[in-house]
Image (cartoon, rainbow, N blue to C red; front, side, top):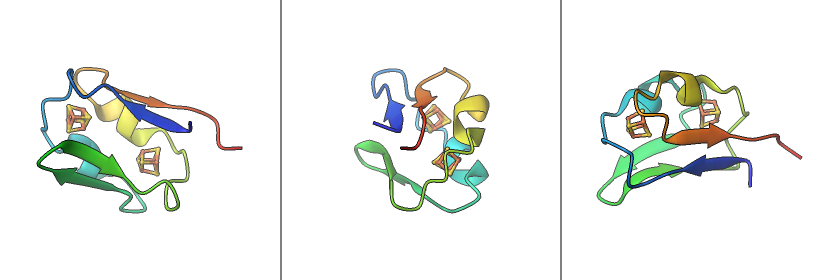
Amino acid sequence: MTWDIERRKCLRCGGCVGVCPVDALKLTENGVKIDEEKCINCGKCEKICPVGAITVGDKE
Ligand code: SF4
Ligand code: SF4
């Protein structure tokens, strides 16, 4: 797992979606979805999330 989101915490504010440099995040009806193929593990989404819902791990 390189990226994880705690769905119960997420406010669906869209902050992480806007900050992702490779457009890997999408806001959907069921919360934020990630395209793990695109993610470069930059950590920007983790930093910007106001409720700490995102954890970015190491890419293998
Ligand atoms: S870690 Fe960076 S590249 Fe990956 S989803 Fe978050 S903002 Fe996008
Ligand atoms: S920044 Fe955090 S609270 Fe906002 S949509 Fe992304 S995961 Fe949810």
